[in-house]
Amino acid sequence: MQIRNFSIIAHIDHGKSTLADRLLQATHALSDREAREQFLDGMDLERERGITIKASAVTVKHIHNGEEFMMNFIDTPGHVDFGYEVSRALKACEGALLVVDASQGVEAQTVVNAYLAIAQDLEIIPVLNKIDLPGARPEEVAEELEQVLGFAAEECLVVSAKTGQGIPELLAAICDRLPPPREPVTTKTRALIFDAVYDDYRGVVIYARVFDGRLKVGDKIRMMGLDRMHTITELGKYTPKQERVKEVGPGETCYIVAAMKTLGDVRVGDTITLENDPAEEALSGYEPPRQMVFCDFYPATSDKKGNDFEQLREAVEKLSLNDASFTFVPVHSEALGFGFRCGFLGLLHMDIVQERLEREGDVEVVQTAPTVSYKVDMRSKGGGIEEIEVHNPADLPDASTIVAIKEPVCRVEIMVPKQYIGDVMKICMDRRGIYRNQTYVSETREILTFEIPLAELMYDFYDKLKGMTAGYGTMDYEVIEFRTDTLVKVDILVNGEPVEALSLITHRDKAELRGRHLLVRLRQQIPRHQFEIPLQAAIGGKIIARETIKGFRKDVTAKCYGGDVTRKRKLLEKQKKGKDRMKSVGSVNIPQEAFMAVLDTGE
Picture 1 (cartoon, rainbow, N blue to C red):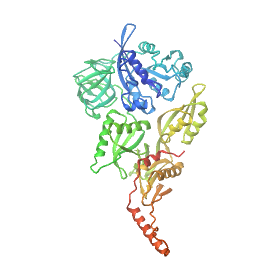
Picture 2: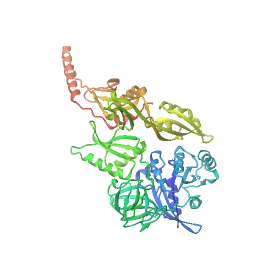
Picture 3: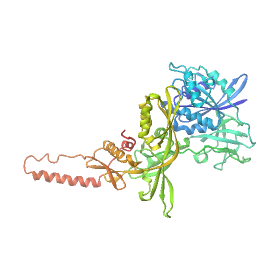
Picture 4: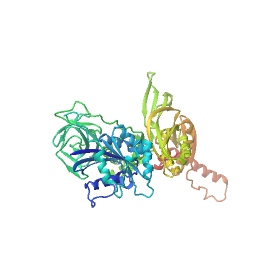
């Protein structure tokens, strides 16, 4: 039996999941009765948002020219934040289907995913999808693919995943044009773990691709990276129903159950070998994912026994079993109590994690404004310079010991219609962007390349880009280096007390403007109390902006009608003293919306 391993890659919303549905139906893995839209997207969240969050691996059989083929394919996410899922999936394949919307054309993430596949030396079949749409322009898009990525326009396959047009030709091309798995280079067993999910009843379920040797039920296996031993209790494939098998050989993908209870028992990218006959050398794994966005999660309500925190801890630990690119460490805040500082690949990743925590863990979460990681050069006690990494403005060392602060800088590629180039250039320059180059795509579109600090991208950059380009602008970014700049920490004081969760690191030129705007937002978000609340922004000991939330005042002079004015003055002085006393002992309630006010730049 011939084997073909491939991934489906594309920009977000170009029809990957629908194409996967049609492939399942065309190979009779699903009957028409069982089929539903986005079959492989199992999460409610994926179906609601219409995006793929988790890659899904499926094995189907297909007869081509009288010969049986086993096809192992992986439907991958399209959004920039889930690029790590895509790179992991490609490592387990020899080929890729690059899907492009025939009406929208080549987009930013199309280019990035294509380069990921080229870097892995995969055979790529370009597929033009949605040719049934009235606005489809397959000839122009094929020329765009040739112009930008160098694929011959006549090699592009045209399909409609919605109607099924062109699917038989696509299956034939997969069998003819994609290469078979490489020959085993050793008799010792080696399998690469490309994903893992947590199951309440079976523990951690591993997805693996066997490169050399064989795996059988009952085998004692060893994780070469973690040096841990387990016994395989179940082997199987998703067809897309779970189907148990006795053994798997070279070139095949499978799922493995081996009574692993915690994420510590498995690491994505590790190599599985046999305990009794181990391989000498592990397969090349993956670069560990680099978290670039950080924020704190706290329980929205907290009882004295700390049950809400424990419930949040359980939810976070369980979610981390299903998402290897999400990290967390416990933190404590004066204002919000105990919680977790979490690391994410990007803003959508953060948004998805919060929503999954609330749904799957049944907890309400208070989230602080996201920040990026910084590298700080500081003077050590020995007189030398040491570099530390800071994920939270509150963790910055004393200003007198700081030599330099370095921030992550991204290479940003923006694909945009020509009429919007001026507007896009202006917003990039406003966000401290450095222009690098401009690439011709077609008569109507170009790619602009800028270098922009990641912190500037976080603050509503994507929303503004979509707004000013009528939804046609698309972007992709990757962190290229940490660069020194004149950055300062702005502290926010509420009623004279610094609130660390509201502090931020920003460029000195923008510090006063950002501080002033943030205080205006806080004044609108924090409710009035019985006493006056001063809000201040400070750099070090210097106050750079102030706003005041007026207190409620009872009309204590209402009962005085007529008589000497000193009676009124006496009552007002008494009220003033009471307000001062209340101000010194009263605590200010800060709502969740206030913590997110940091994200609004006011532009």
